[in-house]
Length: 116
Picture (cartoon, rainbow, N blue to C red):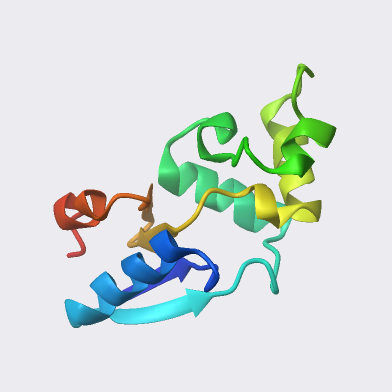
């Protein structure tokens, strides 16, 4: 089975998740989402796979959050549009397999994820 990881190699949690996937002999496709930002449709598909509101997979500590999001009443669509322009706001890492996805900042999430 193929597993997709939205990866930032500068992030320790993302590197740990990638190593965990590789250590468990999973076929991993790496998407460097900062270099290859997701389209609006890809973000909508990812949201569907995560089954989470967009605000639950945003990086609130980034300066872009303060500039473009904080204190505003934005729709899900508007948030997704911001993410197309500012992918740094996407929580990392996100792991996707068989149409389901999780934010894998904690490796325990991967251990309980059904990759089959």
